[in-house]
Amino acid sequence: MRTAKGSAPSRRPAVVVLLLGASLVFSALVVTIQSSFFTGSRRSLVGREEIRVLSDLQTRLQQCVASRGLGLTADIIDHCKLVLKFPEGTNSTWYNAQFKIFEPLEYKYDVCEAILLWEQYRNMTTILTREYLDVRPDGWLEYAAKRIAQLGADKCYNRSLCEEHLNLILPAKPPFHPRQFKTCAVVGNSGDLLKTEFGEEIDEHDAVFRDNEAPVNEKYAKHVGLKRDFRLVVRGAARNMAAILNGSSDEVLIIKSVIHRDFNAAIKELPNPVYLFQGIVLRRGAKGTGMKSIELALSMCDTVDIYGFTVDPGYTEWTRYFSTPRKGHNPLQGRAYYQLLECLGVIRIHSPMRAERKQDWSDVPSKEIIRSAHTVALRLKREQTGQEGDLGPFGNCKVWGTMDGDGPVSGSLDMSDTRKNSNYNKWELVLLERLRKEAQEHYAQMGGVSLYKMDGNKLDDLVCVKHTL
Ligand SMILES: *[C@@H]1O[C@H](CO)[C@@H](O)[C@H](O)[C@H]1NC(C)=O
Ligand SMILES: *[C@@H]1O[C@H](CO)[C@@H](O)[C@H](O)[C@H]1NC(C)=O
Ligand SMILES: *[C@@H]1O[C@H](CO)[C@@H](O)[C@H](O)[C@H]1NC(C)=O
Ligand SMILES: *[C@@H]1O[C@H](CO)[C@@H](O)[C@H](O)[C@H]1NC(C)=O
Image (cartoon, rainbow, N blue to C red):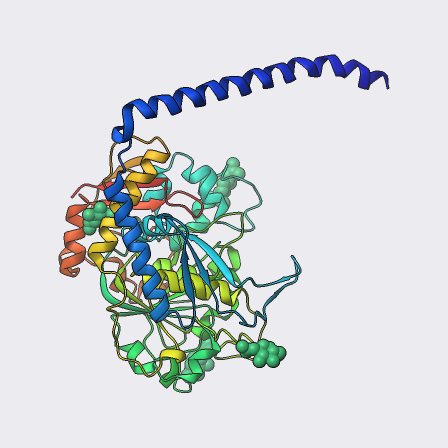
């Protein structure tokens, strides 16, 4: 009782401050309203014309979803917000045991955010490099430690120890470049793939991305193809890697989350190039591997076709093409989001529901429309966040660094003979002159700057590294 009484008077001043604060906010509000009355719309960089650009895009998205969405519909809320709805009566069969709910049939999106996010990915570097760790102020001490499991410390207090863990998989500079490939196929693992024969079509792409244990062999060839270029894996796949990569020594392995001793030991026996993905959402738990494969592909490809990412709206089980049925996760949520991305021109969906199709993408808003919407969305965002100036590609650069030297070379000093004599250099030592014209042009337009994500899911904070030639 005594302590409660004693503390009561000290609470009073806080209340006074609070009231005072509230009245200040109120009068500030009045002032703001008045001043915007006087200055009119001149204060806003985003005028009626720009809102029209975004609203126009929304209308086109709505049409695109209606014609491509296999029953999905889009409700426009305002110039940025949109809701995608599955048809009434859709059976939601995936049950979230944690929240004790079935998957919802409606998903709300901020299209302005989505455009900014996915256009940015096309210019990103998504492989962890030595230059990134060097340039980031906390790069070695904090960030590197998060990418090593079983380190035995929360930070890299002993940098040589951390280097030992990472050397094998850490190239000096980005081994891959934006626009490096014209067409890419990202192959998910959905059991749906067995309902179609997209194999040949998949193999016609300049690069094919797969994930985890996805088998590639004669047995599944007509469904998933045989071409193997990139494979994104979670750490659990480490122990099977030798078997999975058997006979495919050029296939680039990209580890999604963390490296550890066992993984390193396995890598030393592999001839394949191996890297760490850069841009994972640390701590909060990573999003699905499928989504990350799409991010990876967008950071090097002009066109990204996705296969094996869908289920029927009335699905009863979520299977993988090479294993018995499993529970899976959030199939409706994924399908709605991929549909939005398709209508934003980011990816192209291929599914059994469109197996007999003509390749007609005319109902997807054009690149020009997306580009103008991007410009407006960027201005709108800068205005909302009170950020000044630069609308160019470096507007989000929070940390800058400069790198010189000639070759993008892996840092490892202890490469085993298997790796030393492998075809590792096929990817890493590609000279700029040998990249396709679009990639060279992009590099020139960017002034030799590589953009990396800092942390999290947003791309608002970038680490930017300028390469001097
Ligand atoms: C740091 O790690 C290296 C490599 O494992 C080791 O040789 C060295 O003794 C460590 N230094 C300290 C101070 O623990
Ligand atoms: C790789 O494939 C060959 C031939 O198919 C087989 O003999 C060998 O055991 C395989 N190695 C591994 C590690 O799976
Ligand atoms: C949804 O499930 C119920 C019960 O399993 C079934 O009767 C119904 O036909 C299903 N609806 C659709 C649209 O698949
Ligand atoms: C992406 O790169 C192009 C140059 O190829 C540049 O014009 C554009 O502004 C960049 N966009 C972003 C979002 O970085």
